[in-house]
Image (cartoon, rainbow, N blue to C red; front, side, top):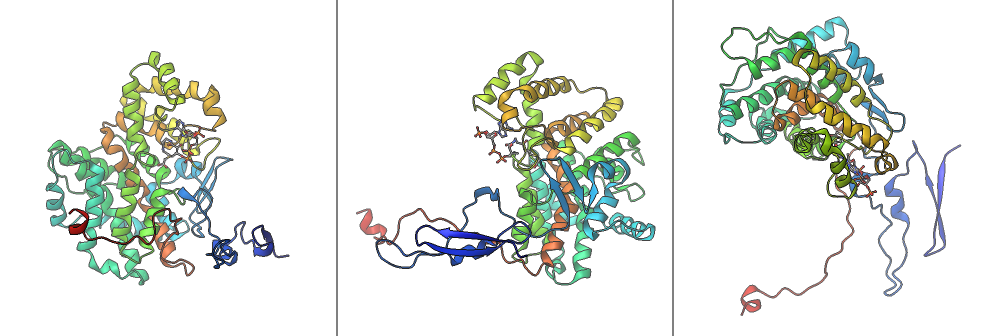
Length: 434
Ligand code: CMC
């Protein structure tokens, strides 16, 4: 039996039957619902959906990531995040997201080889990055350098060729840590370190961040594993704000560097990936456990938000936050406990009992504890979101690949409800100002 929705327009008394497919109705179907203007008698425009922030609008079909916000489920290509975080590697997860299935041994080796040998960037990109001011925010530098890559790889504009798309995907996953690490070194006035292709993806990233004069940088394996796990947790999150930015810009058929640069920009915001930086600044500002109750009262009074809490989709718990809490313990074994942890735990304890947070179903999200780990790894807060961006790159690209081969997709172009003036007569400035 075909499922459908019967809608009665009380303005006209007309009934419409609208098919329900996959639990949705096509917004365009509502366009047939029209009524005449009661004053002029003219036929009005078709009914549209008003949905700021897309709270109840599906923008695409996707087989990349599944989330059940009520049950706290997150799966990449059907595999639970808990299992991937426990037993996979970031590059294997990247392969899974991009290709849709897990690699064979040969496929994995070839993939690692490809990504490893695309880690270098053109020397001019280095000079481009060196042109930033000493205090440039690393996310601004990352966004600009990802965008700049579109000029180094003009072939990327041929988005209709599958091999070409694959090449850009490999390039971007490979080069993101290089650009990210250089934005970090730049702020410190240290020389940029070239990739060491003898190292794993994440160990090489740490090398580009922290190496000085030693011939090979040997990061603690436990820290490499922890950062790799964080990358896995951040790798995709279905139609979040930055994936939506990538898709929206990508829908114009621009090259993927330009589309991903838009994703980096969206991630920068404090309501999205920028929350991890905001959490750390918030914890530092609170300063000690005694100040937590007063801070919570301020949040409840609407003075500010408890950063790292709440999520558009997760309403019981964020499964990534649970894994991150465990990773926290593993990192602190190596680095010593971050003193801010106690404040974070007290905030969580109070918030989980307090009616304000319980009623609004606000729980710690992925960013609540990740900042503590990043700080323990000696990253400054402004660098946290760059780490998120490196992890999210395969997800953005998987979403972009899906978009470019989806026949149902169109240029993203929402409607508006116009609220401004109409039909005014323009008076030239010479007359208006006379
Ligand atoms: N602290 C205090 N109150 C909050 C918070 C918070 N963190 N989040 C939501 N609320 C309240 C909000 O004031 C509103 O209350 P009321 O109904 O009385 O007006 C209610 O909860 C619903 O909030 P909303 O803004 O309508 O919810 P949303 O789904 O549009 O926003 C969110 C989701 C993540 C933007 C929001 O919870 C938030 O701003 N959280 C803090 C920033 C943060 O941690 N972001 C990271 C998200 S996870 C990682 C990522 O995506 O990058």
